[in-house]
Each structure stands twice: as C-alpha cells, then as structure tokens.
Image (cartoon, rainbow, N blue to C red; front, side, top):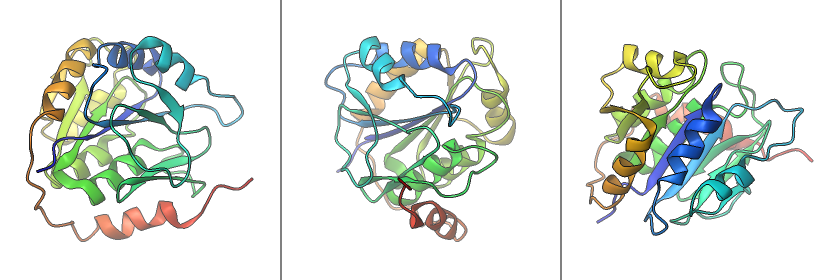
Length: 214
C-alpha cells in the first residue's frame, strides 16, 4: 500500500529561509519525493538547488522534463517554467503563467492531486498574495494532507493566511515542526480511492501540453 510519498511545497517572498529550515530537518532516508516551487524572476539564474542541497541531507536539482520521481530527492521548478507531476514523472513546461506566476504553486499542487490523490502532502510556506490556496483545495479534495507555515512565523504571511481563510487546513505549524510531520506522514500507509473532481482533470491538462522552448 502506498504512503504519503509525494510532498509538494510552495513558497514566495521570505520563502528561501523557510525552505532551508524545512529541508535541513528532513531525514536522509525520507521515503518520499519533494517537489518545490519558489517564485523567482525569469531574468535571474536560480541557485536554489545548491542552497537546498547545502542545507540538508537530500540532493536538490532543477527538475528535468520526463524524469521519474524518486524518494529522497528534491525537485525544484526552473525559472520561468511550470513544474507538474504526470503520473509518477515530472514535466517541465512553458504554459501560460497562472495568477501571474510561472512557475505556479497551484499548477504543481493540482497536478499532484490529480495523479496521486491521498499520497500527496501539500505545504505552503511564506509568500505574498494567494498562490497555493487553490492548489491546497485540490489536495484536500483528493484526500491528501494540507499544511501551512504558521503565519506568525512567516516573513511574509499572505500565502499561509490565504490558505487558512479559504479551507480547513490539516496542520498549521512552525517550519521546523513541518519537517517532522512530513517524515511521519511519509511512513503512513494510505488508501487512494477518492474520485477525480470534474474540474480538476481539464485544469491539469493545461500545463503539460507544451514542452519547454529552447
């Protein structure tokens, strides 16, 4: 029986420090794949994989289109590309921005929810505006676990507060405690049985249609 082995994490303003603290407390033998979206300017080179690799025991790299998800690895959305989950593989696309963002947290979360249902843990960290809220709703609707950083701890509390205002979040915790929760959930068996909501399938078909442009 599968476990909560698909961890999707979204962050924006103030999110780098939260991500460093989160991955720094994850165990080396985590039986789950971690996928991270951080809002970054398309004009800047992202060094987030290097930062996260140095912060904890799990290796982090920018996701490559078509690679299979593996436990104990961190996949980071490249700048100006959406990262989505496509039935156990990663897709990197240049579909239109969502909510003004590419990469978009909602885009990743919805695709993970569609294909992996209750196996998904969705985590929203520090950030401005509301990206991640709709994605957490999709995770919740498919039986996954929803987690937000305690807004009182976040450097920018907009994204965690938006999630708390729009759905009944399963866990609201300081970042250091989120890592322990992920480790616990990754070892819990889950039953994947909830149907795909009618609107979720067409929404998640939008992102994978285009491969990255060179």
